[in-house]
Length: 56
Image (cartoon, rainbow, N blue to C red):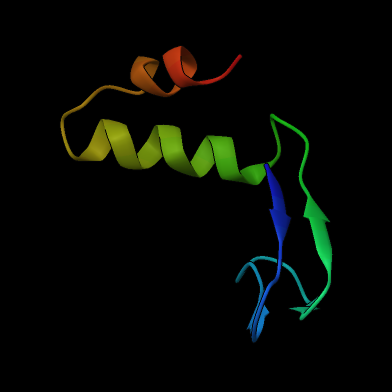
């Protein structure tokens, strides 16, 4: 995941850092985000494998 904060601030609940205006954020594939997406997709009936189809 790549992100750039244009206005305000942004953070993950799982981490203690806060990205503020002008900050660039990078999270490599396979970090906690992918795991959480797989769990969510599975819990709502979409299937965890759908997440894999969206990752290059």
